[in-house]
Picture: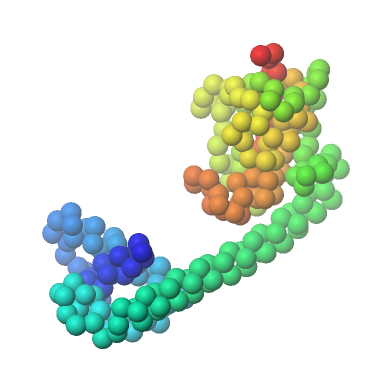
Length: 233
């Protein structure tokens, strides 16, 4: 239903806006209307309905807002609206499936090259890869262990820095298994006090298809983790 609201807002803008002349925005509501219209137009341009009849679209907006006579019955309106939503959902699923296949292929190529070039990299049974940069001492951390650690993280395929504790905040005190993506839960259980590891997580074991915050879905990640201590609770 939100998409329908956005379509109405876009229709209003199409009525008042000349494509060859910058639209004047006189107040906050004008700005809001413009943002809604632009957002809708971009969604339409990149979606399955990018060839809509703009004149009919604008006429529908005017007629509905002015309480005019609708050219289709309410039942046909509801049926068509349901069809539109199913079409949009199907298109989104197909696009996500194509994207996941592309990322899967890039991950496979990345890991194959990584292992070939670095004999120190090992594969974990769950599917991520890791390298011991510095061995530690004592027993490994376990599920539900209290841990104190620093880390750096990167998006794997382009190597761009994502986040870190070093120089930004104190080491993190956390419990293994508490809000933590699947790969990290297993990764911490490989580590012991004083160790430093580098982990390569496919997106399935990182933030998944949904992503998190500024990390988009289908993003494989690299984490370099220094485990300082495993204090007893």
